[in-house]
Image (cartoon, rainbow, N blue to C red; front, side):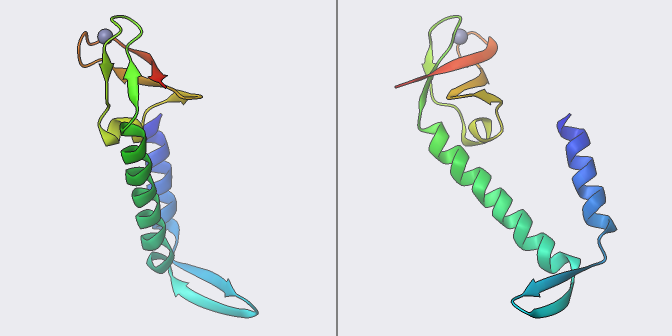
Length: 102
Ligand SMILES: [Zn+2]
């Protein structure tokens, strides 16, 4: 699923040849990378910041009750339901929803 989304995004980016940017009443014709590069930087920076903040939380394994802090990239890209996130437990290897400890 992630690979399909990434492929669709990359193909869409490659199909763009130019962009029309409206700034107030003025219209500018700019190259696609003038819009794409800052967008990618903002998305990556947001993922790093969110992952860093989320990795400071303590999560509890549902199988062995091991308490751990995930890596920033695991926290940023994990599936979640409310504050519970899917991680692979570093202690027992169980992959499933881990409760966020308050
Ligand atoms: Zn565990």
